[in-house]
Each structure stands twice: as structure tokens, then as C-alpha cells.
Length: 310
Image (cartoon, rainbow, N blue to C red; front, side, top):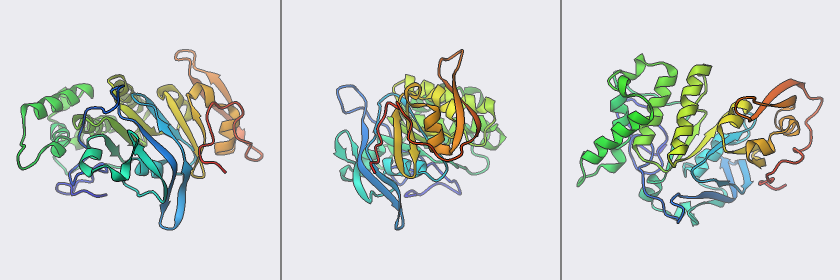
């Protein structure tokens, strides 16, 4: 992480400023009113070991993109690269057509934010205090707390449905409520692109739904949201776009209903499955039936590309 955080807090990985949390918000650059983020032959590594290999992906603006795949396939590493927390070993990340590495730190902070898997805060910090930290990147020597900051905090609390809990210490909340509070901090920062690494991890089904419904509402309000998920059925229900990763490469990408096949599940996890249709939402439901004898070929008919090449 490249930020100094208050007290003993472990904050969301900041993209830019030496502040607690994510990046500051900004208006969109392109004619469609939304920033665009994509990669060209992106390779990322931890030490000398390549983890993500030659990826060509583009995040649909104002939509929810889910990244799925087995443990260790590079999902979190890809998020780090997209958020400029990891320097590319090869290729590039492009923000509105410009190499992310050439964009100023402050400008990146106004567009991209990343909430990592684990985020903690000092004891006694209230929900409102946490959300207020989201405005820190907007502060400076010549700009102190303003009415706009207060309005942004209230709007974030409203988006997360947290007004009644605003003065409660974080440690008194349920897991789903705490996660919503952290996401509300990101909302207060007005980040156009928001990345969430396993935001529903360790949450029960009710709290998962709280967080995922909030993610959908953020996209409906114009945010581009990228999240790592493990449950394929959940990813199919809540995502507009899906990236399926294996061994550092994207083996399929596109709308979940188009790419989610039993062949893809076999390729990713070595598991046989039946794909049904959710009778309420019309989205794919993945029903594992047993371990496959051996990993199968890449999914036939997946409307995506093997972005990693071979």
C-alpha cells in the first residue's frame, strides 16, 4: 500500500494520494460520460513470477464486471494492476486511452478506487467517521471541510442505507453492515471506477445480498464496478459482464448468460456441472455434479476471447 492511514487502521488500498481509503472522485472524460479502463497485453508479476499474462480486457463502463476463477489464478493481482498498485511487467493499462503509468497520481485517484479483501479500522470509529474519511483526498492546505463534503457523506450514507447506523461504532455492526460502511466510504469519495476484492467473503447469505444489492445500485447510478467473486451463480446473477480466469489468463469473457457453460466450469475447476436457469431472474444457475475425470477444453460457444493468448 502507498498510503499513510490514521491510527491503526488498515484501509482500502489507495490509488493515488497518501490518504486513508480510495481515490477521490471526478467527472468523466469521454463523450459517454464515463471513464474507460482497459488493458493491452498486460503482464503482472510478484517478484520474478508472472501471475497475469498478456491480458487484453476492457471494463464496460457503468456496468458490474465479475472476475471469477480458481484460487491463485490472478484475480486479485489483476485488480492491483488495474488500480496501479502493481507496475506492469509488460503491456499496459489504459485509462481513457492513456497509459495509466503516465497519468498523474492525483488524476488516477479521482477515477479509480480499490477496496481489498480485509479492511479494519480503530476501535470506536463510527460509521459516519469512516465515511468522512472518504473525503480526505479532497482536502488540502487551501481546501478544508465544505458543504460539498458534508453532502457527499450524507449521500453515501443514503446510498448504503446507513443513516440509522451512522453514529454506531463499526465493531457493533454485523458483517454485512460493516462491509456496506466501507463501500459507503468509497461512494463518498465519488470514485467513478470501484474495484472490490471478494466483498462477500465470510458473509452469510443475507449479508451477501445486502452488499450485492448495493453494488447493483451503484452501477445503476453510473459507477463502473469490478468485483472478484467465487460463487458462480451469484456472479451470474449480479454481473453484467464476466471475466473467467485460469493460470493468469482470461479464457472467456462476456455476458454471463453467454459464456457460462458446463465446459467452462470444467475448464476452470475440474468439476462437472449442469447449468440451469434461475426461474425468477433468468440468469444461469451452476449446479456442480461431481469432479471431472480430467480438465476439459475451453468452453465451446463462449462469447468471449482467450485474451491471454497461448
